[in-house]
Image (cartoon, rainbow, N blue to C red):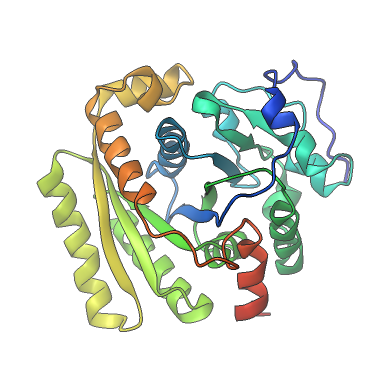
Amino acid sequence: MPLRDSPQPPMRAASSAMRTPSPRLGPVRTIAITGGKGGVGKSTLAVNLAVALGGLGQRTLLLDADLGLANVDVLLGLQPQATLAELIAGRCGIDELLIEGPNGILVLPAASGKRALAQLSTAENIGLVNVVSSLQHALDVLVVDTAAGLSDSVLTFCQASQEVVLVVCDEPASITDAYALIKVLARERGIARVHVVANMVRDANEGRGLYNKLLRVCERFLADISLNHLGSIPQDDWLRLAVQRQQPVVKAYPSSPSALAITQIASQTARWQPPVAGHGGVEFFYERLLTQGVPA
């Protein structure tokens, strides 16, 4: 199936530091941002978390793993010449895809409207994880924006990451689907801990209440999973304006309520204990899949 797109404008010029890979200096924290359903603000959080981490001095790579409905490049106002579609088709190498974004973060863009990418097999998803693991750039954090739902791609990228952040909003379908995803991650992929972010809430109390709803259900029916309330992001017109302008809110409106909340979440993740040496670099992605195995 041909995957070549029509010609696109040149991508943003990369810095010399980005073009010349640096040796890794230590373990890399891998964080998957996911959601039980679409429309909960998963990609917006992934983009802004990556940019906020970059602003904190963390060498950050943002991987758009919503392979069929990618929008990370759109949210950042970037114009990639090539995407993961070209990589999977063998028309380019992974280093050729890297784009430099705000605060010096690196971005690996996926393709939108590519049915073939959304229907990769388990082996193909693992192969993609392996290719990402081959990157030789010095990194502190890899942020992975997964697709929504229970697809094999979502489960594989969550399993391959060290930390899973689940975005939920105060809608019955969001809570139900979030629980379903937690259940599958725990029982089929061996995930023992999930961080929860309550999005589009009125205030911190509503966010905590939303988290508690999900916690009660999990405590009743799932004994093999631990939930952590990572934070709450308020409903914010500044965030909506930033999305319309294709800018991260933490960069465009850093004093807005949503930007302050996301920056606080980024500060927490930056303080997480680093991975154990030897099980850290981006190659942890692939190592974890090999160690734990993936259901057929």
